Image 1 (tube, rainbow, N blue to C red):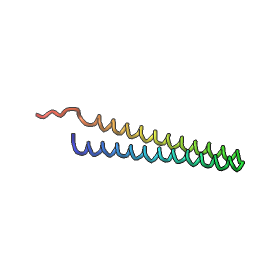
Image 2: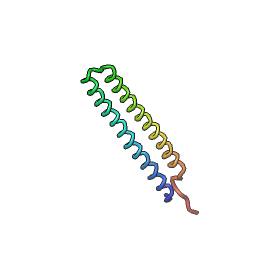
Image 3: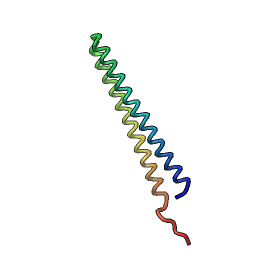
Image 4: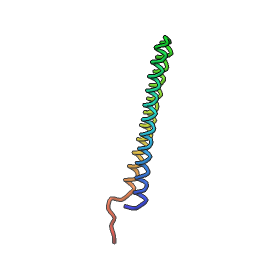
Length: 93
């Protein structure tokens, strides 16, 4: 295997891991902030705002996870295309 192949493979895997960490972190923080707004507004008596803020935070976390899925599927297809481009065995004549 060539150095370019190994370098590209590592780059794709690294980008996938970074995207996973950032987007899962964003989804987690959105849920935490939504829960905190829910609790604060619930205690203050603003039930519609509390529920709306929590539902909005859940929608944002679902969007983050959907974006993560889109990125990971694209990276997997790039990785598969990279693997099929490299011949399995080289014949020396």
